[in-house]
Length: 82
Image 1 (spheres, rainbow, N blue to C red):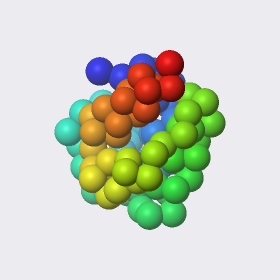
Image 2 (spheres, one colour):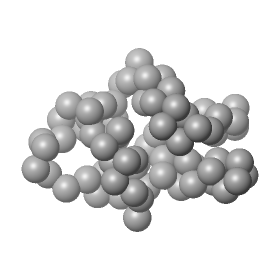
Image 3 (cartoon, one colour):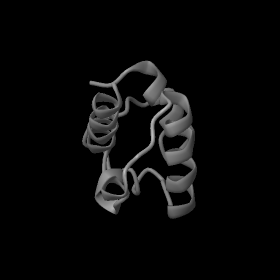
Image 4 (tube, rainbow, N blue to C red):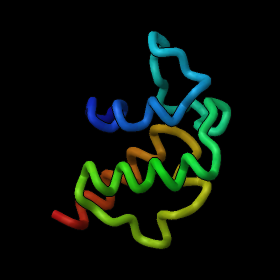
């Protein structure tokens, strides 16, 4: 799964997810309230927190489909920058 920092950054961008509700890896981020503006803000927050830069090929709607896909993409970016 992902680290606590990732979930801590992601949760504020999901207004339809209650604070006590677990975040499933296959949850639809758009169904949880992530809109296009929030995607851009989330991307910037993740890049800043993890000190990485997402490549253009990672900037797709599919990347922001579920927490699991987003974490997988971020993990790939982290591995390439190590």
